[in-house]
Image 1 (cartoon, rainbow, N blue to C red):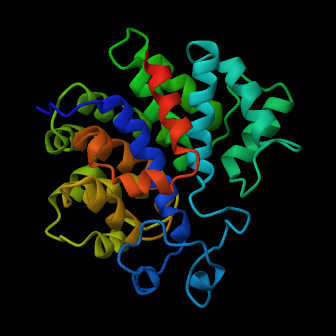
Image 2: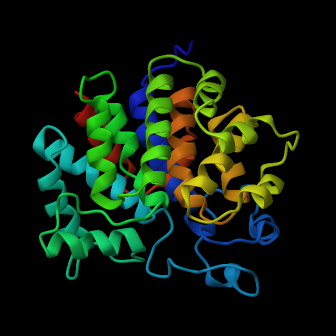
Length: 306
């Protein structure tokens, strides 16, 4: 049983800081290049297009600054602002905010992934029930650290999770993996140890069970088995492997970065669970300071939980 303080705030900030820490290596599919260009630690490696040249990679964040959030972190912070402004998760008002933020002329400037673009198109066409598209990728999970922190233990917890997921993703696989993640994060927030939560969740999916049972200790190597792209049936097993072979927040985030591919998508899962398990004090202060707008995000995370 964990007795570490502030697990809800730690889950939310753990996800956001992990996302920002990973941005400089996001969608680099060559772990050797990631390790080679990282100095003492891969976290918060400066954004540099040269690091993506000559290897399997996609450089998506030329418009970003060091310390910014990826599109995943932007979705999470948007959900936080919506909950704070409306004293809860109101789907219609969140959809309005989503289209205003990510749509043409909105405040977001950067890469727009397929579920985000499809969601904006549906909202603008008044296709809101639901507004998501048929897609099983990591955007499905982006809002969940704050949804779980706010609603776990409530009678409508699973309904809130489903509403949040269906804003962007309406897909059987997305439903399956997001519910596993939400229940697991709720377990950790309720005091279940991270190893026990991983074991309990793995009973619901053979790929997750395989990630815990494999004799392979190296998560970079295990990424060759799961794959490194953006689909939840790849990202969640790799996240499970990483979390089961690290014993601190810092090590978990660095291991996730080194595994390559859609490491920002996995960072939401890894960061939230590691933050909840190890506590707010386990997140390195220098990483928090390196995350742009961290102070306002921390205040916001506390406000939505009161």
